[in-house]
Image (cartoon, rainbow, N blue to C red; front, side, top):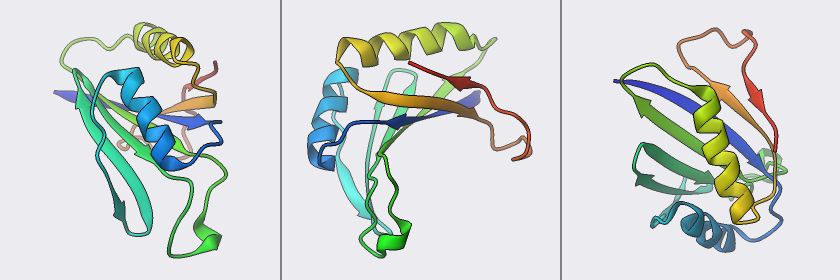
Length: 122
């Protein structure tokens, strides 16, 4: 089984706990969260998606805080992977639940960091 990764930069300006509730509705899944090395991370699994919601604030240092929360999806597949189908499914879910986002980036840990990556927009 192979895995593809999509990180989506969210524009939701709400507390992390409220955002967790919104994303739980989007994917119809429970996303328990805990503080991991200074950041709250909510995790869950729904079908082919492993979902992680990462808080923008870091409790250990204000220098490590980010401007936006991040929705990170891991998608397992066995056969040919169709980016367009997955992207359209994710875009539809986010739009239907009025989740504001800036962009998404596909990443593959096996590829060099300097390789251009597929980017999606709302």
